[in-house]
Image (tube, rainbow, N blue to C red; front, side):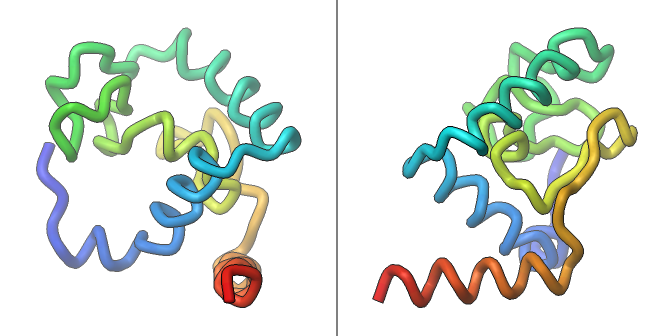
Length: 106
């Protein structure tokens, strides 16, 4: 699986949210990540070896979309490509969240 630059740029807010939430852990995000992981562990698209990861070395990942699950599960704006778990934010809410996070860092 190889993501194009266009796909990465399109999803950059979700990727950044996942990175931020992985580094700066919050209980509500970790609870959601655990619920999502329980679903992913049973999924036929779980890639624990990294054969289908968009970014090598980021397994476990989703063999369908190539995303690192450690990040995707912690991005509340992301959803499973097979609709096995939902997104909790609209695109507009995601943009507002990213702006809020940037403001907090300053």
